[in-house]
Length: 170
Image (tube, rainbow, N blue to C red):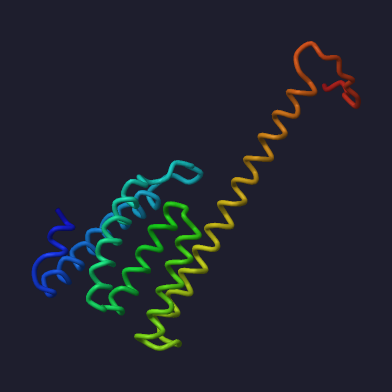
């Protein structure tokens, strides 16, 4: 239904629809962020990522409307939200690519040294940090897996082992 509404009506109604879609996506992203903020320390469970998936769809639709009506300033802002959503979904390459596009649009609209461009660069740093953290976590999981399987292969049931250096404890 959104597609039918987006492609019908006046340009003003279409831009109004893009604003509604963007606001709805922001609500989904803030709910996701809130779930992650409220989780217990050390809890590995993340918020409901389906909220980010819904936000992605809404933002893509809003972005297509904004581009069709050459609303580049609005599109740059929508791209920053889309990059956040990609980052939450651990789609880091897409997040960086989206932010690069937002930086280019913001530079054209607001100037290269504007606060919006600076904000995009700040988000880029956050995305890169999140990606580095995810890579470290995956690497640690891989190392643990390799160590566990290596120990099983070499020290399985029924194998003889030599244990040295044990001392009697009191």
